[in-house]
Image (cartoon, rainbow, N blue to C red; front, side, top):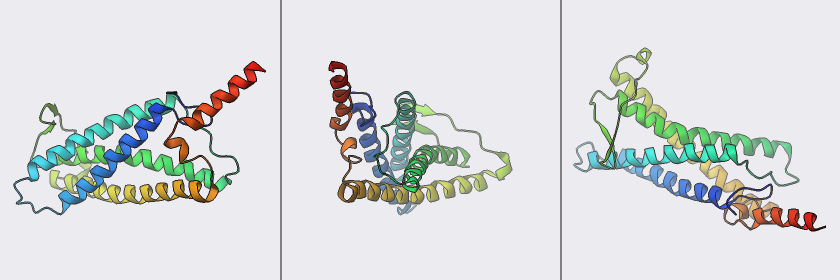
Length: 203
């Protein structure tokens, strides 16, 4: 069961979800740790290179996940959800996707605008070119500060959305008692759709 069905997620979507969840949580914690290190710390250069490397991994996985979602639509929302909750679910997912893309891109722009001109080499193997920054932002220092602020505030907003996402999943599991959480950890709900189709075909 690799593809999604109307009742659940397939194995590929589930793998994307949990792999990216672990990477993003790790990157958020890593970023907060880096922010607290003194600029004189000799480990800083290597740690920032590692942070940037994983940032590009997240960006690549986010692009692949978005393509998979466009080609393989998500299951329908549980029956009985009020309109406002359906709207909140859609907006929440849009916000998560937007920030998952925005975090590595703003980090890339921040490094590109830095007057230090420090290169980015993914896992000490693949060099990544710097992006041009809008001259309307002023000097390189001003542009770097602008993207740094976007990156920082985006991280805190992403943390907030993740907490809301987790709370909503737990609410569905323990209060609404539907399959919302179960179908993101198992392909069983997705298979139930195929089972129903088979029964109708046999009839």
